Length: 344
Image 1 (spheres, rainbow, N blue to C red):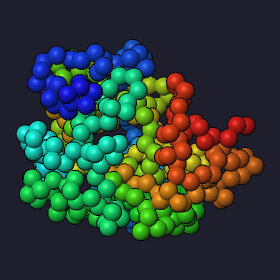
Image 2 (cartoon, helix red, strand yellow):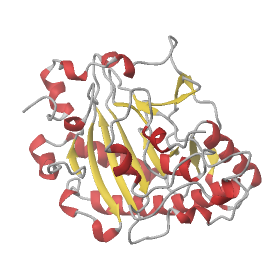
Image 3 (cartoon, rainbow, N blue to C red):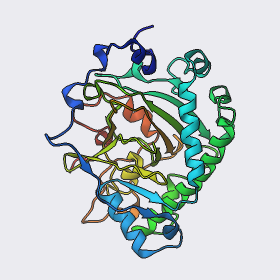
């Protein structure tokens, strides 16, 4: 099997780092000093639910400056979060022949494997299990593991709770802009067509971790991403003011990442952050990203209420953001979202 297609875990067993995984200069850390920790405070989700003005202001500050925040008291127990983490680790520890029962087919993202066959430049030191969870009738259960035995029921419970958290968050984000709380429903309006994916990420340890990158710098093409981090091993970093910052591990927290489609809809007020995953030389690391994506039939663009003389419309209106943007060649140094910016 080509090293490009081989699961990263299997490459690790060989003890030799293939050249394709060695970072290019574009993947290296910005600046010469080790990244500092992200400084913004955590958000108490229970206070957002009760419309606390102080907590709304903290949410607004974090998502307009960092595009990233950590929320606690979100209604999910630490026991559930740990169960999700543990079943993820159990799946990736299975023998290769067992995991390959759920392998992706062709160019389909769903299933087990990695995306290295379609990567440009250096490859990601990452294996994934990518599953559609909503709409429910679109679930391809052939890709949903039955080992661990509780995987499907636990993921279903976790997905339902994440969906409720997501809905509260987009309402709270609207209120933080002094808008009607349902205004972002313009991009999230059709339960039969709006999409949610669960992406389980596994980053095997690598003795030459300074030579590889878990996920290259990128922005998410979502409305929001809700990320469950590893309980013990750091790895997520966000770019702010041309410097990388480490996102700390808070075992009971979920990490919010603003997606490109929310940046567009908010007319650039909320920021979709460039972020990456780094690899640990001694410890494996996991994460689970819940990706909330509007229906391809929904037109997205800046809300009329957020277009003013002082802040003119910054982005084009378009449908099917992912296909339109990611099918194009992105010039070096540009983010995909830059393609839909209007020039002033």
